[in-house]
Length: 235
Image 1 (cartoon, rainbow, N blue to C red):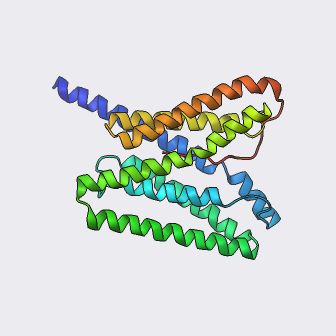
Image 2: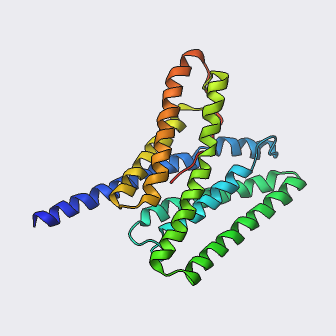
Image 3: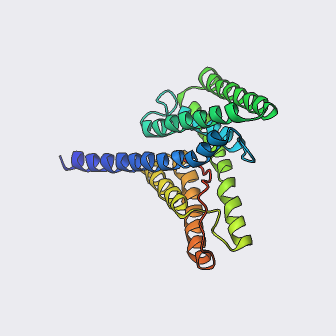
């Protein structure tokens, strides 16, 4: 009886961590909305790049596939958060393509088709060539590689803050949300005994601490905080 109660508490804590990660991830998914309002208003993509949203879509699709029961049973909250993320990224890419000039429109369409083609190849290879345990390893390593590559964005921002001694391009609420989301999924991965979730989000948590520390230090020298959203990686 006590064992069942302990298991129930453990399961509840695991689910709570996953749900918290989902909620915090949504905060990050909606962060580019001001940028896309500007794009829609001006009917121009100006100097904004669509590549971060392409990379983010691929990341969401790979992690979504990893979280599905056909690959990894018992971590459906990873699938839910990345399905929502994929929808947001598709919406952003659609707006970008609609408002971009012809050359950029063609390039973005090509990249979008490339993302879907690569994802289909990954899904087919994992289903056709790997049995369930090996399938989880195959897709898991791909998801970790994808997530860690997404950390290039925070590293760039950290470098920019140190060089400029300004937090203008590192909004506090995004840094805090990123840290809390990574921490939530780190806990979720540890509860699930899944290193493919805990390891990349552990890296994300460390980077989040670094960003918050830098913000605390350099905000003394800066009176402004950027209102432009930054793309960050998510579980």
